[in-house]
Length: 512
Image (cartoon, rainbow, N blue to C red):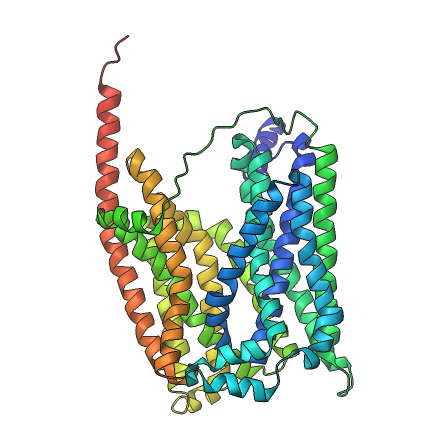
């Protein structure tokens, strides 16, 4: 009986915590780094939105993403490549991370307090606006409040530079394949649990206004606390990395620099080659539409939602306090979806149902969101019966859409997308994934911003383009759903064909 209980415990331990005790020396500091990087990512994301949306409006976001973040990312990669030729592995890590911490610390202590002296005057902004379309007012305000825009760009770079490049680059370098199958899922949970910790802290420091007299700059104090958390978490990241560099990496049980890993055959393809490869394959074309559909739809709703969020919470403190609560719920829902929904839904309901879950949830919550914006006056009675207002219900539906889209992405969208590569031949697996990553992912991320900039140019601000955005969203999601149905048929046929080929291969006698 005791032996049976011990075996059952071992099964549960292997499922929930598949780590040997001696591996904790390597796993724990990596998990601390993952937690702190995600913690900072959440704080910076909520703070940058609070700064830009309240200072320059949500209309500034598409412009900042296209003409701010993209050039900055290119410049960063050029500088990073140059530094990689000068510094060793540890030196490159520190040289990349420390400037971020210095900037965020200086922003709270020096740059933001001097914003009135640093920002462009209203007269200068009006002169710039006179040369641009009226719908580009968001661009003009982002230029006028350039310190907030710079903070937005640096915060966006944190995700790509520190999370994607530094952490995952380091993890991929020192983690063996056998370890990655167990460690990487734990890292993913660490990322999302960090949201559950950072959210309440963001709300607590943003709500500091309630305990201060009106003449005190409550947002300045909140910003100091928020950036202090970022700097402290950054120092913890450095300490964890330093400890690993001195105590873990020299241990051959955990890392052998001479050990040759089996490298994945990754192929980099240009835009032209990617388009040509995709257009020759209906299978990959449908998969690209699915990936683009998610990216464009999320961006279309996000900007409109944040504009409504500004109307409901017009000052920095209240806006960021709401975003803290939003981050907490997002982290909680993602963890629950990862643990209890994703894999179970795919196994029980199949690929098509699981792949359709994300677009169906997105369009339902998105249409409810747009309905409360466009027909707010007609829905006042309904909102009053719910004890709310059309604006608040629009904010809540927009938040629900963002939460569900993010949680379903990690638990359903990403797994079903990756499953479609399994029955492909070797060439299509390599070249197809490279092509979809180039065309689908990149155009998906920037496509929504380009669409909104075009609408701003020819129609006007967010309030004017909202009906058009709703129609475009419906078209995008409709194409996404059609692509899923088509992909499901081709996916099932290829899986059946692969099973038949494997069966014939297994039945064929092997000759010496």
